[in-house]
Amino acid sequence: MPRLFDFAQMSEAEKTAVLERARDHYRKDVDAESRWLALAEKDEQGTRHPLVFVVLDELNKYAPRDGWSPIKEVVLDIAERGRSLGVILIGAQQTASEVERRVVANASYRIVGRLDTAEAQRGEYGFLTEAARARASLLKPGSMFVHQPEIPVPLLLQFPFPSWATRKEEVVEEAGVPKGFRR
Image 1: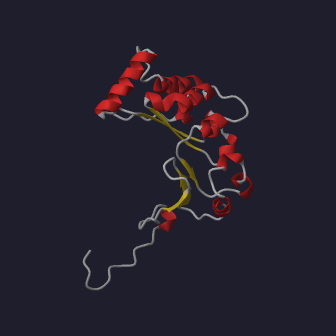
Image 2: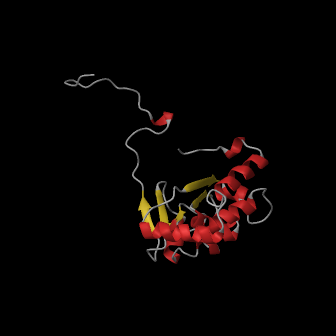
Image 3: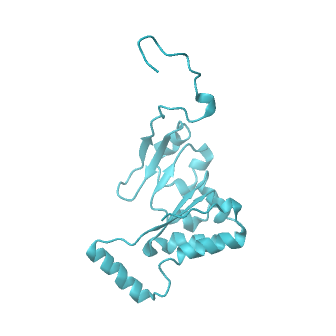
């Protein structure tokens, strides 16, 4: 059963408790050797533990590059060791340069939408080719570069524009039913 927590409504202590619980999900009453054996058995049998996904929007608030956050150490721990524990961190941020370097460095998948030209030249975007960095400043909504470990170059993806209205101002007032059609 999925559980969702809205951090915007939580105190700092509550945020810390929720993230620590997610991080410790597979550690409870299990020492490192037992956990290693369990992972080896999981691989051998081809089974999967249920995964825990931690999704954080505005990641720079929780793991800022400069400064302090009450849950920064927990986010770092999840980023650095979470995958081996079945805890997956999905972070979203407008500018990766504002997020703690160790969190960005541990990202397996990187998705980049439209970027400011200066931001695109930062080291965090070193996985992009020079041409992709230049193109990133021109991307239209729905277009993005995806970098993942299996393919050595970033892929340009485009999500199709939805065929229905997604905002109230996109709704066209009914013009009537054309002849020959039924309501």
